Length: 274
Image 1 (cartoon, rainbow, N blue to C red):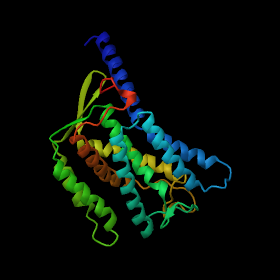
Image 2 (cartoon, rainbow, N blue to C red):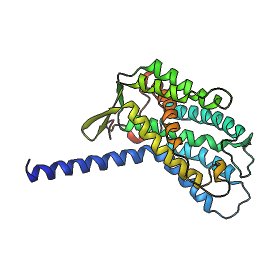
Image 3 (tube, one colour):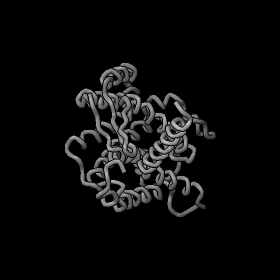
Image 4 (tube, helix red, strand yellow):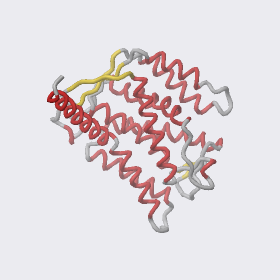
C-alpha cells in the first residue's frame, strides 16, 4: 500500500469519526442541556425556590423547547415520558431502601424523591430515540419477545433484589445469549456499519456510568459513601447500566416496529443519516 493510500484512508477514517462524534453530540442534546442546567443551578446564589423544584420546572421547559426545536417528534416525546415514569418508580424504591438519597429540600418531592429525578431517565430515552433516527438504525437477528421479557425481568429484579434473591447475573447471561447474533446497523455519512447489540449495551452503559459520576458531583443525588464528600461511583454501576439500558431499548424498539414516527420539523426533507 502506497503512502498516498495510507493517508487517504487515514483522512477518511478521521472524517467518519468526526461525523460519528457530531451525530452522538446531537443525540445527547437533551442530556447535555439537562446536565448544563444542573451545573448552573449548583453555582446560583441562594434563591427563594428550592433547587430541586427549579430543576423540575427547567426539565419541563426543556422538554417543551426540545419538541419545538425538533429534538423529538410527538410520539418520541411519549416514549421519553414513559422512561420518565419508569425512572420515578425506580427512584421511589431505591430511595426507600436507602440506595441513595436526595438530601436537599423541595416542595415537589414524593417519599423523598424530587419529581425532576425522572428526567435523568428521560434523557436516556431521548438519547436512544434520537440515535435511532439520526443514525438510521436497523436491526437484524433481533429476538423482540425474548429481549423484552428479559428487560422486564431485569427491571423488576433491580427493584426486588432488596427482598428477594438477586438474579442479575443469570438474567444478564440470558440477555447476552438472547442478543447473540443481533446486529445494530447504522449509517455515518454514506457508509453503513454494524455492531453487536450486546456491545452497544456495554458502551452505552459505560457512558451512563460516566454521566452518573458527573450527576452526583453536581449534587443530582447522593450515594451513602458520598454524604461526607463526593467519591467516584462504583465501577459495578457500569454493569447495572449496561443491563438497564435494555429496558429503554425495548421501549424504543417497540415504538419503531409500530411504524416510523413523523419526521420532526428540524429534519424534514433531510436524509435519515443526516
